[in-house]
Length: 194
Image (cartoon, rainbow, N blue to C red):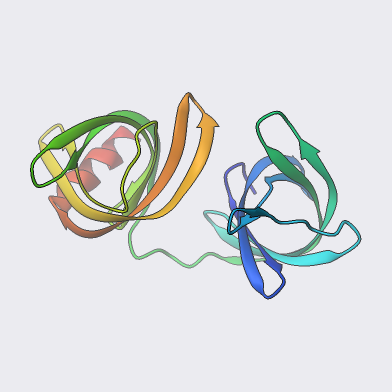
C-alpha cells in the first residue's frame, strides 16, 4: 500500500472512490474524505465497510472501520483501520504504464488554435495519461506531446478530474486515449527516462 493508491469503499449499494493520503501503519491509513454527487459521505464510526485498494501489484480486498474524521483548513480526511485484508495479483493492464514525475509542456489542439500548458506527467501509457496542471481541460481533447524525435498525438477523454493542491498544481487529470499517433516514439521516450 502506498500514498496515492485508489481505494473503493462499498457504501449504501454504491462504490465510493478515494485515495490514500498517508500510510501510518500496515493496518492504519489516512484517506481523503470521499464525496458523492458533491455531498459529503458520512460514514458511521461504529460500522465496518468493505473496501478494495488498488496498488501496482495487488488488488487488496479488505474490511475497514473508520477511526475518526480529521479536518484541516483545506481538506477532510478519514483515519481508517484495516480489520482484515486479502491480496490477489493485479490484472495486467492492456498497456504498460510508465511512472514518472516529469515536468513537461503539452499542447491542447483545437480546430483553430493550439494552447500550450505546463504539466507534471505522473504516469503515461498508450492507453492514457495522468497529469497535474493549473489549466482547465475540457472533456474531449486532442493533445500533442513534443518528444526528442517527433510528436505524439492523441485524442482523449477525461475520465477523472480531481482538485489536487500539491506541488503548486491545482488539478489532477486522468485522460483516456481513444486514438494515438507515433506510439513507438512515446514508448521509447518514457522507457528511456526511467
